[in-house]
Image (tube, rainbow, N blue to C red; front, side):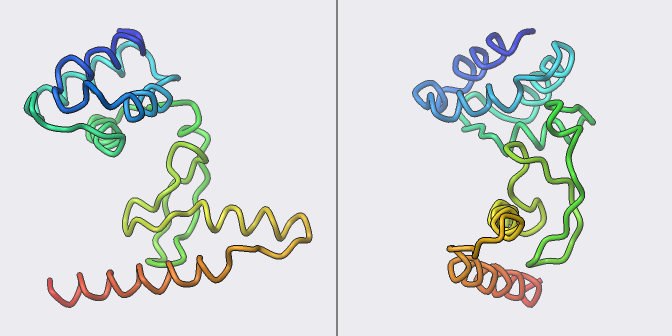
Amino acid sequence: MTKKEFVAFLGEYFSKMRDNQTVLTEIGRVVSHSGPKALETIKFYLERNFSPGQYVGVKDIFAAADANNVSLSSYHDNGTDVSCEVCNRVWDYAQGVRDICPYCGFPYELTFLQIQYEKAGMSYPYMEHKKRLIVEHRKALSRESSSA
């Protein structure tokens, strides 16, 4: 199965995705370096775990790949272990592939950009926004842990 065939399958099989070219294009980008066997495995998983009337997004493609130990792209294989500033868990970051902490949802790209600005000797212009997001994510985590 080619990337084009995989994306066409998603648009045909999942009725809610037919008109969502933005998501289909992003999924195509995410799977662009995946081999035919990996795409077949993900397709089979999606058919078994989602009904045709459901919406399937990029996170579902990642979940299908993770559940089947399938690598989506060469970018993921070259990921870097990073520590999330919110939940302090270590995870595999690959720019453009896994930009969000899989444990708490914090957008690591803010930390990545800050590191790049600091390497260039510049101040990070979005620091206040980043700090506010960290506080919001930590509050959400504490609410989740206290209700569990």
